[in-house]
Length: 356
Image (cartoon, rainbow, N blue to C red):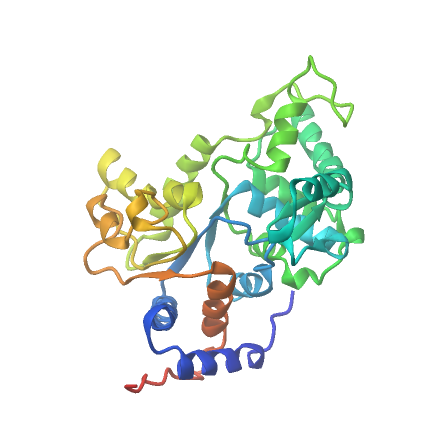
């Protein structure tokens, strides 16, 4: 799939350079510059993604980051995995509720009866999104069971895309789907706690043979979908393979939760449990709205990760305490605005930030 022209992002880069000089804004600029430098030095970037980023349509910029090889692997919630596809096939049936803060409990019940599942100000349509994909992926689950095959959740999603099982229902440009881009690049995607998602719920329900279900089908082998523990084992292999020699791997974290903790822990596991002196994460940035003093992992400052042997005292590290739906597209657009010309020189060199 063709990449978007550079000019589409360059004006955002110029805006950030000109205006983002202090506080969280300056941290965003610092993090974007360090992200860019990490990639230009031959490093790879691992993305951890919590929250409802797919429903927020982060794919508009994230897909391009993947296509241009600025993101090399992803760990996300099962919700983010499926909701990018929901948006792809049912976008025109979504309903926005800008006055969501004013909804009463009875208003919420009315949305439920209409088959609308609310995520903040956006309602995902049950019939056009969830049921449509559920019926198609059930075919793949059953086929795997019949063939005694097993796959990770993202591999089933890639099958949906590659076999064009949903293409007739596309309602957005697939260039804006980060999962389509990841499929084209064959990126590995880890989804710890996948059962905490709509499709995960459906799958487990289908394995309970003593109960009737909406699909009239059952799956006898719950192992058709590989587990998070198996996924963590493959993450070890991926990290060791991709950090060989001089190669460095950075960690870009949107939100916190399981995707972040699951994936960043691979380094101390390799070093402490396996006794292999692999490299630490070589860049760290988190977009967070959590409060440090609450004792949450999501709000932990980067320095705490030094004590767990995840990053070092020399690792470039940033926390941007803001809204990821605003910050992530800005950082991605900043990075996408600069390319390297055919001689390997930077087409748009970074301008030094003048003192205010």
